[in-house]
Image 1 (tube, rainbow, N blue to C red):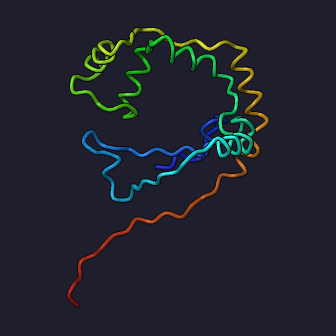
Image 2 (image 1 turned 30 degrees about the vertical axis):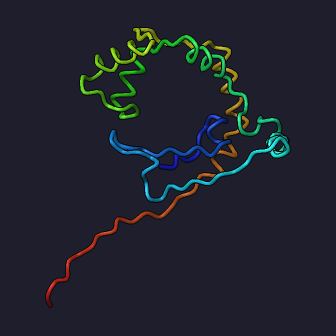
Image 3 (image 1 turned 120 degrees about the vertical axis):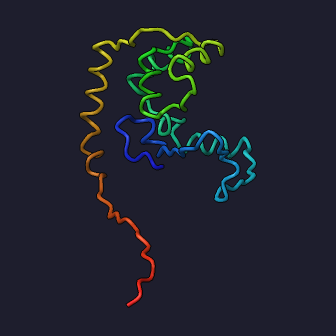
Length: 158
């Protein structure tokens, strides 16, 4: 499932891609998945580091980085985010619904609470300015693709 163009800089720079799997599916068991063994030497590591400007082209700064880091380190998940993720199918369904998912997360050391993440006006302003600089290029790369449903009809006697 290609994610397509992404308005935030990091996924766009990395050309993000996702594959949706069912609960019993294993990515490694897919017939089209292959494995290549590569050796990363210090020289290759330095070459790629320089090629991607010290990682900046793959991991560009994002006005939301501090918030993302905070969410990762404090192990607190807003209940609204959990409900939204489950409701939209972005998170795997739990047999006991939201309350079951909440209990499972809490048993794994997370706190799930009714709290919205508030983002400061300066961060919103910085993101708006960044978008203003990048949006012309972003919209200029959107293309329409032809799509057709394929229907196989049984042979009909003449």
